[in-house]
Structures are given as structure tokens and as C-alpha cells.
Image (cartoon, rainbow, N blue to C red; front, top):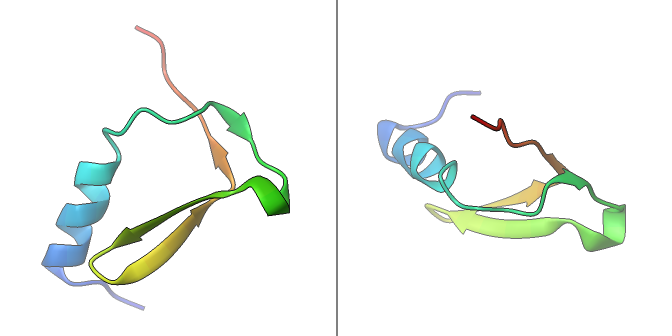
Length: 49
């Protein structure tokens, strides 16, 4: 599977969003639509400076 440069750009841009840290239960996953594709976030980590 490959993605277009536009989709890649959308994913890169979304990586700067501040999201809740940790794992999510299947019924609590965050969903975001990027360039018409829906993504589910099952976990999120944040590197502290």
C-alpha cells in the first residue's frame, strides 16, 4: 500500500496535534479523517523534552 504525497503531508501535519497520552480501549479510540481516509488512534505517546 502506498499513499500520495498529499496524504503523507496530512499525516505529518496531524502529528503535531496534542492528543491524550496512553492506550485506548476499542470503544474509546480517537478517530480523525485525513484527506478522506479515517484513521483510528489506539495509543499515543509523547516525548518530553
